[in-house]
Amino acid sequence: MQLFHTLGELRQFLNQHAAQRIALVPTMGNLHAGHCQLVTAAKRHAQLVVVSIFVNPLQFGAHEDFGSYPRTLSADCEQLAKVGADAVFAPSINEMYPDADAQGLHQTVTIQPPPLADILCGASRPGHFVGVCTVVAKLFHMVNPQVAVFGKKDYQQWMVIRQMVRQLHFAIEIIACETQREASGLAMSSRNGYLTEAQKTQAAQLYAQLGDIRLTLLTGARDYAALCRQAMTQLTQHGWQVDYIEIRHPADLRPSERNDKTWVVLAAAKLGHTRLIDNIEVALPFTQVE
Image 1 (cartoon, rainbow, N blue to C red):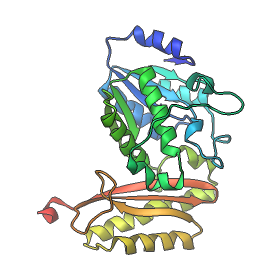
Image 2 (image 1 turned 120 degrees about the horizontal axis):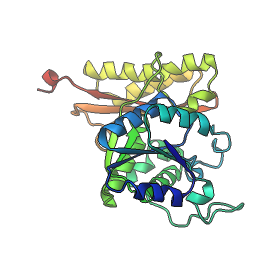
Image 3 (image 1 turned 180 degrees about the vertical axis):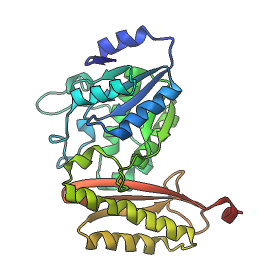
């Protein structure tokens, strides 16, 4: 496995493998088993796997954790070598944003995300998906992959990227991988490292509430607002600061309707100072659909 910090070095390497099918796995580092699963999936769809590691300042808000976000490049590279990544691209801020200086990034050309970026996490984090789309578009241009792999834990992000790829005619297949979880049910996340051991145990409550909503939907309940309110109340009573719990259509994140047969339940909430997101997909059994 090779490590590159500049676009020139990366492109020289990629030119040597121009005949191969390339997959990109974009990450912000501080990797865990969920990221390794993305690499394993990428290897099934391509001959050469490039993993990007870049903590993107453009997608962080003014009071978010950009400065404290863990940078663990050496440990990340060790993990990636074990799961068979071929290259790691870990650029500096100036490599990604060539006009950046002490006063800011000066990235005046950005990607405007689709309207679904304005809801859920987008409503709570204005400008977040502009940063996501801009950096992902840059990485697509730099690596020129045929495949890109994303995790479903960031469900809204995955859907935003899919729409960007479709509408901007990127010739890239977007692969989604299921969320990897701890034994408790807690979704694996780089931000879990902010949690104390006691909070990690408590954090499993988020997925448990989503599971309860899933079971209730399968029994025929369709008062979506009431189900979400009940789950939010339960979490709040246990010390969470809930941003949202929403039941949406899994294809486009529009509000669910009474006659829907499939749903995705999405949530974002803070435990202490740590913001966690999660989701669960729900579908009626075939016999019930019929």
